[in-house]
Image 1 (cartoon, rainbow, N blue to C red):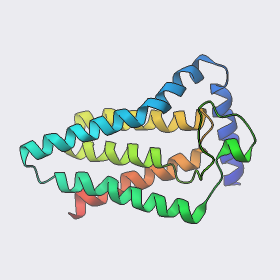
Image 2 (image 1 turned 90 degrees about the vertical axis):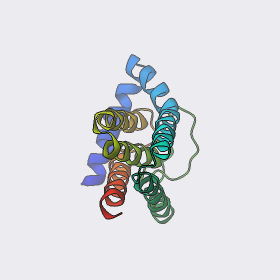
Image 3 (image 1 turned 180 degrees about the vertical axis):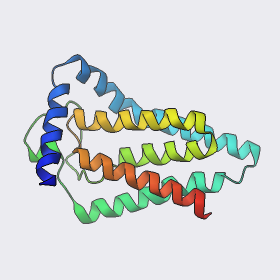
Image 4 (image 1 turned 90 degrees about the horizontal axis):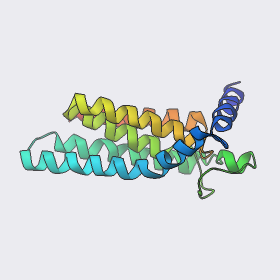
Length: 166
């Protein structure tokens, strides 16, 4: 039942993006978002280094732990991407590697949550951008909604754990 819901939601969101102005917006969002997140992340790393703030440790470890966990889960799970499984065209060029969980969403939410711990007023905007990034990944045809949700969950949990346990 969940697989059917996941596919139905994917087909609806992907359909909203195909040949529409919304798809024309989501393509650059998905292509540029990684660069935006890494620049923001690097900026906060430099800021904390200059300030000699102890939050630098969880800021570095949360996203790193999330990435390691997501990579291992993807290696074990090996779920095909929707454009491969459903034999459709993705709106962006992408390899046919595994899709579960979304490493883009994991990274975006881990970085967003980490930034929220350092500066909540900036972090809330970064988390909103992370949500938009996840939505764009579905709308361009490279992830199922569950890929995004699990990736986001891993990212948030990894950063929350890093900031609360270290």
